Length: 226
Image (cartoon, rainbow, N blue to C red; front, side, top):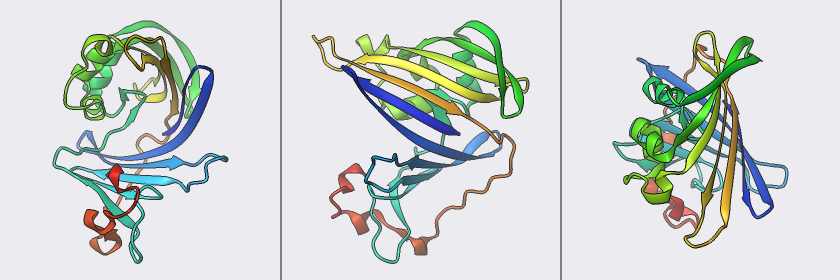
């Protein structure tokens, strides 16, 4: 999956890119390899995350590994799981994807993507609905469900589905108020394209010899991000 995120407020606009490769097993995502691609004006090198059940590994400037190590054990928790998501849409979970498609408001031909003719489904779904339907969204949002105006935030979405019902493209957009009593809003737009469904993928777990433990980099100025 190749993903472009655009966000901003008050006339300012920023963008970032990332590429995601996933491994499936027994009908679910078993590993995710996410690479954040540095822009031409970004002085920092790219950051890469590998996520497996119970563990996330990191490589790059926000998690500097000590000499002789390639990876850092960024996060370890039995609740950690790999996902395939784009803009709040859980593409790798059939039940969560069906919950989004249940809010479809229109359909039309979508052209050819990944050598497959597609149909565009589009609609809107609220944060509250996503939190209820999607384990990935719950993990990203937090342990407590959205309330008040946050629960009512509407995510506009478009999905390009092939005849095999696999997603070939995702577009989502939403706007959030950033402070009570103001009109300042953050906007977000995400456009992701997916290719290679069914390809053989092997994402190996980093070995102990090449991995620094969390305590080995706790004095890094960026360690608070862990």
